Image (tube, rainbow, N blue to C red; front, side, top):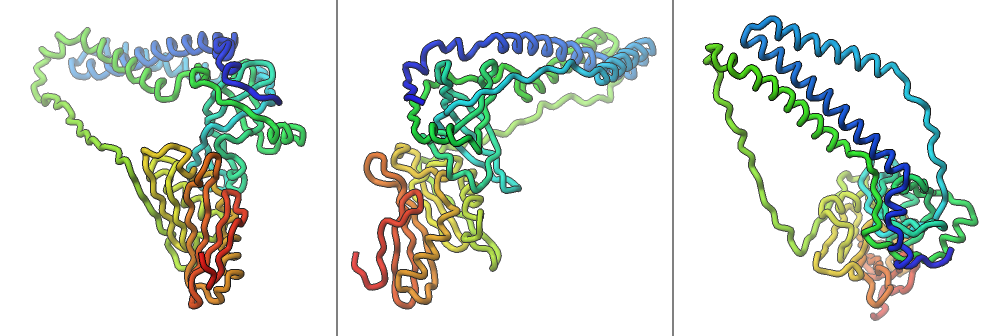
Length: 385
């Protein structure tokens, strides 16, 4: 695949963002919102009618509210039994995508949820941006790095539906290795036209309260003259707010507890890095220190991204091998402790620098490696420098 430039990505944005199926989805979403508003308002009004009827002791109002609730329940049961027409899912297509950023969160299994920001570059339309979340195996996470190229499956009529292909064919793997894709502008970001769960909940709540308030207003005269004086005045809840200012520098560390637990165990380093990322609320740090039972990070929000280390891009699964190499080949026969220091590289395009230091009776020795855990330098015991 050839290079996809920003000029190509920026043109015909409307063609990417508003396909015909998206317009149909917007119409269906509007009808669903209207339906939900009416049902929620009627439900709120019916429940309010029951409460008002009990207070003013009005039997017809009570029967009316109860009857409306029964009708709503029957409609819900009938609608639930009706099976919607089967819709054939749209066919997916394969394309290449540039990984703009990724953030992994801790999970309970070997597959962890990872949030990706991608520039998808189809062969037959301009490139566009999308944000997705997908579960990736711990072992496969090092293969996905910022500014890297991945193979994805997308739907032409629903471009916001993108899935990373974790096991692409040999041809697409070759194309991914040879491709160069420029970042698409933020203006090309596509999102699903459907309302989020939070929006649906807020709409339901507002419609419910509006229906209940309407019924109360209709019977306000009877309510205020019913002689019910035992109600207490409503107190407006006090809301406490705390303001916090973000520090320009930060540091955090975590300790792996238990005498038999070590960060050298498979997967423990990456999970610990995820916990630290959640604490500092960023994946970009200026220094990482790893010891047998402790991992610490430091950072500076004023640093540019090129002078930081991305926490999730490091090959943690290969670090135990570096520690074994340092403990057995640098002249330290009885190593008492080890430490891994990761710092940003110097120079344009330089990756992070990894240094493994071991200490024993003979002294201190270290070896250096690059971002792929390839050893670049050794300093055995007694060697200068």
